[in-house]
Amino acid sequence: MKSFKDSTFQDRMARAAEAKQKALDQLRAKPPVDAAVLAERRAARLAREHAQAEKRAAMQAAKKKAALEAEELAKAKAAEVRAAPTEAERKAARDERYAARKKRK
Image (cartoon, rainbow, N blue to C red; front, side, top):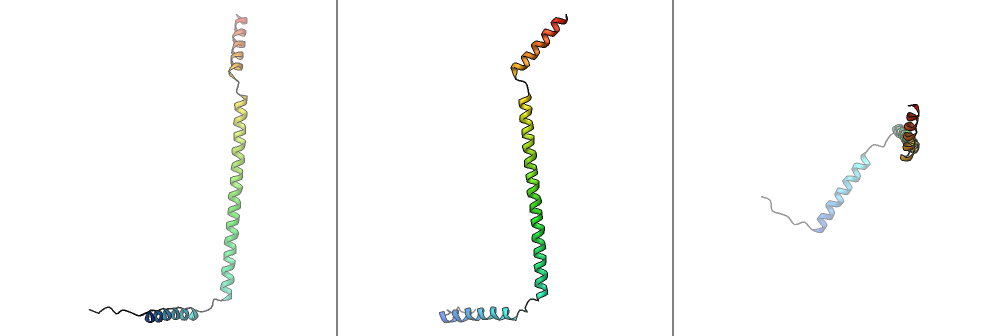
């Protein structure tokens, strides 16, 4: 079994520097991105953003339309409630029917 080797501060710093250098070398070795590919990606991104903006606008319009319909429905129900006769009006109408029936007899 291997024994544990206690590393010094300089050893740890050297390993960290080697790791950084390796990462930099890998980054530098990466081929540059072609301008045509960049333009294609940019066009795709713009098309996607445009489609999302249209979808967002359509959703907002639908929400606004639904809110207006709900408001109109609420107004119609409020008018219906106001149009409903009160208890006194219903009693008066019933009394008129009874009186008309008695007149006919």
